[in-house]
Amino acid sequence: MLDTLSRRLWYRDDVIYCLDVETFQDSNGDGIGDFPGLSQRLDYLDSLGVNCLWLLPFYPTVNRDNGYDVTDFYGIDPRLGTLGDFVEFMTRAEDRGIRVIVDLVVNHTSDQHPWFQAARADRESKYHDYYVWKDEKPADADEGVVFPGVQESIWTYDRKARRYYLHRFYEHQPDLNIDNPAVRNEICRIMGFWLKLGISGFRLDAAPFLIELKGIDDPDSDDPLSFLHEFRNFVSFCRGDAILLAEANVPLEKVPDYFGDGDRLHMLFNFLLNQQMFLALAQQRAKPIYEALRDSPPSSEVNQFANFLRNHDELDLGRLTDEQREFVFQQFAPDPDMRLYDRGIRRRLPPMLNGDERRLRMAYSLMFSMPGTPILRYGEEIGMGDDLSLEERDSIRTVMQWSPEEHGGFTSQHVDAGDLPRPAIRKGTYGYLKRNVYEQQRDADSLLNWMRKLIRVRRECPECSFGTCTVLEADDSAVLAHECRLDETAMVSLHNLSDKTKQVEVTFEGDRPRQMTDLLADDGKHWSVNGGSMSVELGPYGFHWFHSRPEN
Ligand code: MG
Image (cartoon, rainbow, N blue to C red; front, side, top):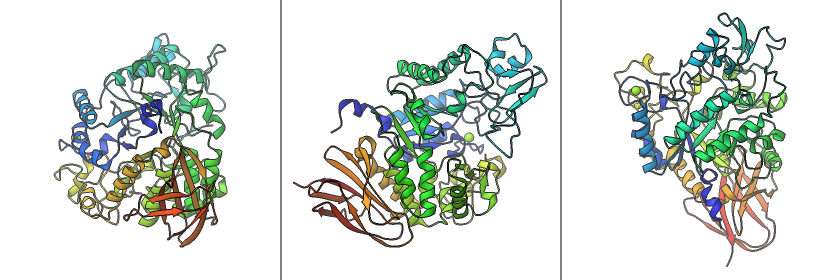
């Protein structure tokens, strides 16, 4: 039984869908996705079963980093629509019970942001201290670049200010000075503005960089972790059920810093589990996931991880050992052009798995069965692929494939491909001629219809959201067996990571007779389990989800 508080913790129980307005649906035939286009697709998203959308940055931008170089935090990129269009979209999402969280990119601004322009022009301006400056180039200026291979330094000389400024990311993205209370006040104002427009929270971009004090030599600086508490307090006062979900790819021992005692950030992306899942997929054995689950900090009432397979960036494998990473590279990115920044893979999942749909479904089943909140990225539900001829991370940022029509139905057929943010993938296994929403909606066996079922079943299993996860004993190293238990009921999942059929004996704690219902099989088979174990056959990349309850 869920208690009253748990029922209010919506983010622990939602399925989040991540999209970029620019690449989702164009409504006015200019080749750029927009808010009216997204509004038109809300019924599709509703029917998919997702109940929270995470929007990538949609603010006015120079657009040299996919919108993460913001020039105005209070507006809408005019290519994507107006504030009016945004509010109309919010209203229509709310009508369908779909929440919206938005990217908050306040580690840095664009160098074209009026704050930076004012900061450069006048050292006496209050905006000068919005950024981090040095008169001399620091000795370690070339260390700690986020994009090795395309970025040389984190300190760049500005001729106008005649000083060096800090930029953890590209040189056109100067870092904000978080130690300056005026900057933190601005961040709160920005959050307050969007919360007033009805959003349910923020995905906090680059959180570890946001709260670092690099280059700031202030002996009176507060502990930067207290800034997270400050932001959390502000958000909660504005809107009690709003959340902060942080991009923080940090080692396990740092996780408590971000969660605090339930009084800092609500959620973190589970980068650690993500990398272990890919290692497990590559090695075809369960141990890496087992260890990641074993080492995860126990979830508290308020805090939870968000799980994902692929996001809009490279698949970051930086926390694996060199040997492990090389093995994953060999399995899933054999060509050096498929890799990026010495640490990651710039491919979508289906081509990494050579289009093996059994393995693909097993991978999603695995991710959805993990304790935490599942996140799906646009196009994953139809198995979209990548275009490696595009630079860096653009390979996985092609437009949504709605139909076999020109440009995949993303925009008017009369638009030139060059006017799209990125050209649609047309031909081949993953091109829109073969792979699109329209056709998969009409095919009962399609990935799209299977994904709908997976989402529905997952939403009917509060055990994964609120229960306690335990890895069960299975007598085959390729099979992961785990259960999420909530009082008397449990969700038991079995995943065969290998390409061989496995007959596996799974051992449960205790020996009470239970009834197990197969949740994903079409026949909804019931199994009675007497005693402490059950024997199940799993085909190559096979999986089962059982709902387990005590037998009457
Ligand atoms: Mg448009």
